[in-house]
Image 1: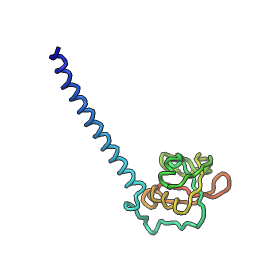
Image 2: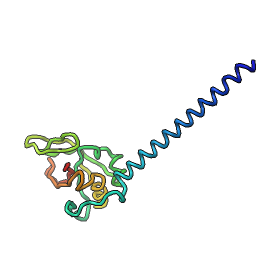
Image 3: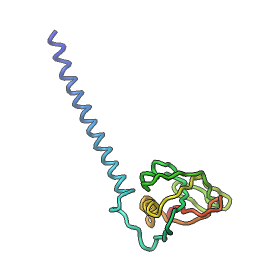
Length: 153
């Protein structure tokens, strides 16, 4: 009777060690991905906009039209550090193509519009890598009101 029990104990112990190691590897992988995401999209240390692409920001709330990942309220909260409500909106004269919008006279791009503080808009500029990946334009939405829109360079 002692024989079978002693054979399963080492197997159980090695399985536990394997699961512990896999858990540690998964934790380190998640930590690495989280650090990369922070450094790439949020960190003030990894980005400074080129002077030629900075568009002056007026004081007060800024309307932003989002047609991609910024439609997600959790993403907006993580990037802007502001709770923002959004409403459905349309951008006439543009068609969404992947991560970009392109001018097409009869097209209409669906998205959302939300408001942020000037600091929140600067954080969005950093997230979108203003001057490196996107530029920010002020366009008129279907409701007749202007909003900032990010377009790929």
